[in-house]
Length: 56
Image (cartoon, rainbow, N blue to C red; front, side):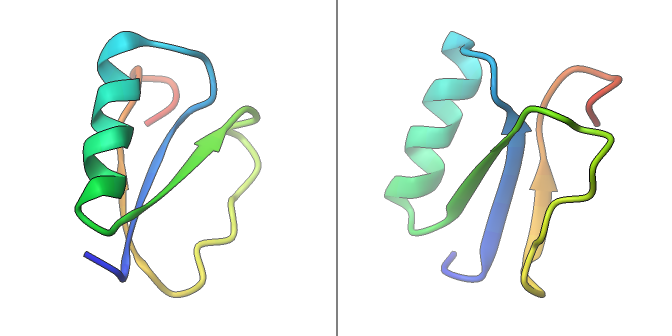
């Protein structure tokens, strides 16, 4: 999973926080996004997005 990037909202949430921990444990990278209307830099990685509907 070293070329995998997970985008999640920056607000704390038990479920999302656990997902981020597991994602990192498997070798992936996690970016927490506060301003979801601003495109994050993803450095040509495979991106997965997890969050509420307006975020995704």
